[in-house]
Image: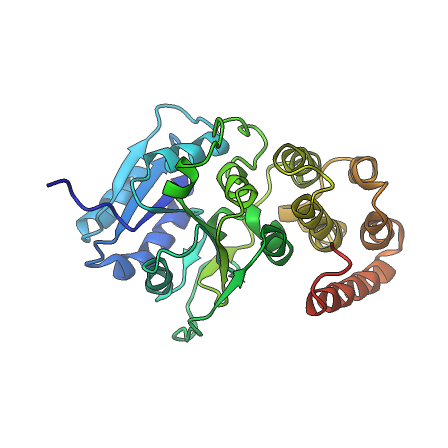
Length: 333
């Protein structure tokens, strides 16, 4: 009799972050103890550091893990896809090596996956700096927000769909769809959107956890052109999957303009290099979004105003976005 299919594959792509990986595995170890429903995979992108030794040390502590090491560094996008292809679980959760599943979070995820209702799930995250520390025992509401239409999920989650640790997908549902080549987004820094957008396009069942079951490190991002990735690349991918004027396409891009880019612009002006807009941001974003009035309200003033006034403008932008959310996103639609 063949072994039972795991309910969830937790797949960790990693490169040269042995200390971060050790922190993640330390928090995961007690959550995975005796847990037969989870398959743990680590795909090492030919790390030159102590990654292999870290994995072996946790194996000796009782961690059951499939460790795969690429012969060469194939790039982050290709490693994400490799994780997805290796996954044998009904659901796949590709998880960043510098993030953490909060204590008790894995059991909360499995509690909802057992129902096998949803095809696409989003998990909101708290943030931490430096070393993760769980200050208090987590208390979960056990609540889920369910979405009737894909555009409602896109409006609610926004650029959270690009955060790999915040998305769980039902692999069997993707395999039933005409999803095309999973590798076609390699080089965009957004290859994970292949399966997420395929499910959205198919009007799959979507839900969002209401508890922060993930903690994301805010100091390890960067190394790419944010305007290129979240502007040029994201717009091109949205156009391919949905069309720019479709309800889902508008939801994704309008929320990115209204919420993510204003925050990133101010972070850049403050000198925060982890979110630095390294390119000629004004030229790129104006070229992409000049026909969208939201650009002129939510982004352009943050480039042009003196920093103290830009700080005040961001405060106003956040207030507008909160009101928009409370009213059901009439502006972002």
